[in-house]
Image 1 (cartoon, helix red, strand yellow):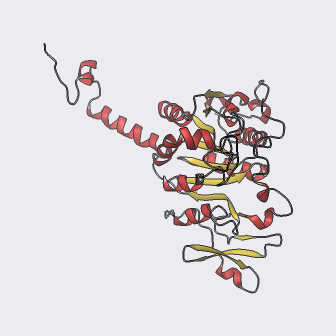
Image 2 (spheres, rainbow, N blue to C red):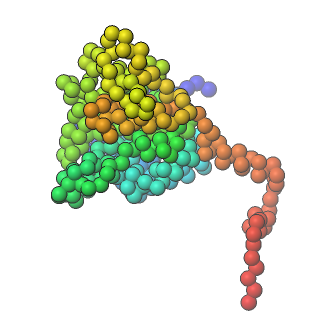
Length: 338
């Protein structure tokens, strides 16, 4: 059977897009609609799931199956969809509030189970749909409608949380670099297991320029390092800087005069999570360092669905044709008498 031949238009729904003009969500939608036709997957096998928030309107704009669920529960629905039909390509569109506040518990457990789903986290560091309250990723001291004197919460680093939960694929990208987003999304689509992508996304109405350090032409090269597996971490306008590890602490060095030999070589396939954690912290904990974009970690482990169906097959072999009575009375039972 030949692979389906699609174009971007095949995945554009007829629904009017209701994001604010200039919102970073448009770029993310465009990147997804450009890559899904190239994956060789029939359109009826795509499912996009969302919770509540600006990002969660995403399924309405994709011409395929989708669920617009309730606040924080997108990952639970996605788990059910993938577990019932493992042949589907299941994607979750969620925001920093939806995934990390009310949905924080589900975020951790979906990742630690290695669900075979793709998680796109739109991180604008604000609650946009409800008009500008602070979110779990808002900067310390951030003044918003719900923190008029400045936030006193330590912000969540989504990448660090995903690493701690054992994510097998972790990446970071930014909305204004559509080409890079598309590359990361393609890598995520081919990964077997949980693929988590944090997307720095601008909310120009309630948190404009939150990520200008990584998007403005004059400064972005000094504030960003783009990861390539097997290559040194170099950055700067002339690639004149590199990252060196001093113990567990990254440092900036000049890449000239042989210093490049000391530069950290990226290894996204290492089982040890330490390197990914160090990279995920750069520029977040220490603003003097550049933020790392690209695939931080990609390893292979059995997925939740593979293990689930393996257990089911073993159970069927043990008792191929159980009666309903046998199923209902399996294990511990109690008989209640008057």
